[in-house]
Image 1 (tube, rainbow, N blue to C red):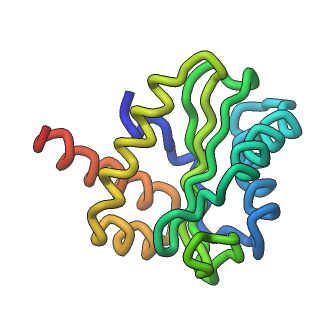
Image 2 (cartoon, rainbow, N blue to C red):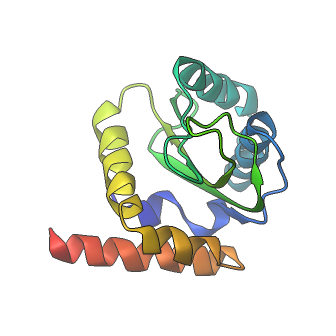
Length: 157
């Protein structure tokens, strides 16, 4: 499984409207539920809040990686939110977050979940990935950036 499969264009929201973490969670989960015609909104939000209560997932400058495990999904899914104005996220550095890589995984699939988080961390090690992604004007462009950088990463493996 690849990140560009986990974050398909229909699960990428450019122009996130949320002003704080809770609004961002709701906006991205709504995007997921709409795309998959899922009625598991509250279950997914609860999984994200539970993980977030342990420690903020605003772990890198301008980036949040909220994630949770729930039986509401049967495989790993990602929802990407790009905010132009920044989101008050209670990040570890106290700064706003502009990119939110939300990941959902089934309760039983720890290995795939961790593999996708690791791959995402590898992409985020390249500051140009952040710069190129934040400037995208639509979901297709953002998806193309993920694929481009992941393809480079794969050829280096």
